[in-house]
Image (cartoon, rainbow, N blue to C red; front, side, top):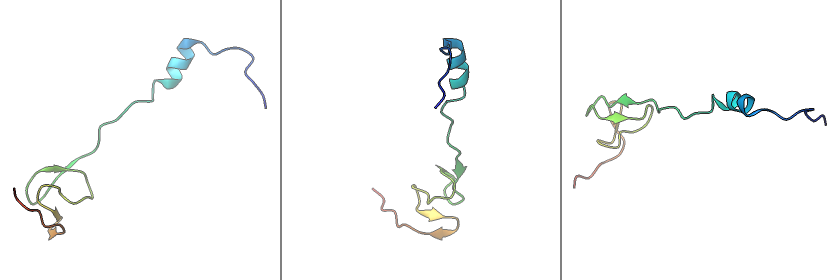
Length: 60
C-alpha cells in the first residue's frame, strides 16, 4: 500500500477539514397548533401528523 512521501502541512490539513461542520436541523410548523416540529414526524405538542391524531397527549 503506498504511503505519502512527505508529511501534510497544518494548512493543508485545515483546508481538508474546513467542510466538517454541524448544520442546523430543518424544521417545519405543525398545521394544527403552529408549533415548530421536525418534518415527517408526529408533533410532540399536540400529537397530530398532518390532519390525523396519532398520539393522545395528556395535559398537565
